[in-house]
Amino acid sequence: MSNAYDKAHELKEALAETQEFKSLYDLHRQIDADDIAKKMLENFRKLQLDLQQKQMQGVQISEEEAQQAQQQFELVSQHELISKLMDAEQRLSVIITDLNKIITEPLERIYGEPPQEQ
Image (cartoon, rainbow, N blue to C red; front, side, top):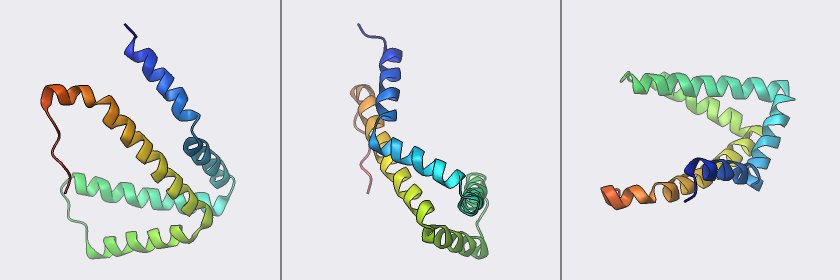
């Protein structure tokens, strides 16, 4: 019988070899080398994190905060490197979501099918 941890390490290596991961890695390096892009992305991520923390704490996000987040998103989306990075993150996220579904299939045998998203 194979060791699940060994298989997980194999999966980690396989994921690191995907074009999606390599693209994301390269884009991060490019952004790190671009002071403007790096600062823009840091500011956007900080704003995202702050808003997520408020939501998790049950704090209502104000209209002003929502507008600020939308403006920040539009600003960073216009930067070519950041836009490419966000696309690459999304592509890798799809792969990870698919892998998670595959990995958790045995649990469905125990707990049944998860409810379908609407």
